[in-house]
Length: 304
Image 1 (cartoon, rainbow, N blue to C red):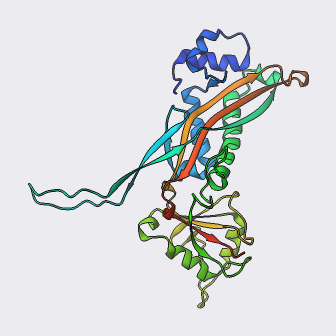
Image 2 (image 1 turned 135 degrees about the vertical axis):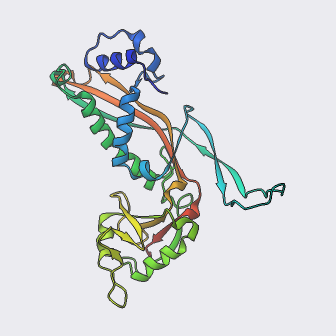
Image 3 (image 1 turned 180 degrees about the horizontal axis):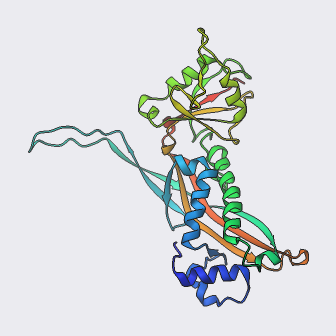
């Protein structure tokens, strides 16, 4: 739902600072949970900030819907275009329509601001909320889109049965070799390598930076932080190198779909922290996520 009218925008921000706003002016953005959708111009800036905090907001596929439950139809296509003569029959592409059930998982954050700040027009309330909530929501989303178990949260990229396929299992439970990385890369089908990226945490990246082949050539390209010409993306939410863990993934993250069921909505809690001279602000959104083609991402699994 988009709230773009000037009247709503003005009423919303007035309501955030003082409590005497005419409720009728906020009706168009009122959610059933008694929160109010953020105005459209704020959401656009907030989304840009989210992209900086959450790698999936940059690299995965977004599907937006106003429904808070139901199914999403995804096209799984391996078809090709072909040259043909005029009047010649055109062959059908190998398209498959697959339905995936998506849920509506609530993600929430609560912050508080000193009351005198809220009443001071010089205080950049919009900037503060954009920065604070994009950091909180972005990190929580990224963690869930990687490690989520699908129960009251999205199904993460590394989910054991619905996430990335295992492309290589190491011989050691606590060390990764040059050959492990090569084998993992080659386990990904060529059609997924074009847009593929590596995903790992900083500790794993440190180990890989020191790997060399038998001729002394480094695995890691230090000039552009890539491996085999594929960009390395660092996420603090990827597992570390321990027995049975999955510290590295490679693949085309466009096959991870995240569903935006509800844009950011907020509510001012005037009384909750009043004895401290603070005002609370709670914000919520509803999202889900799922890897719709498991073979598009391959994972390195450490030996048990």
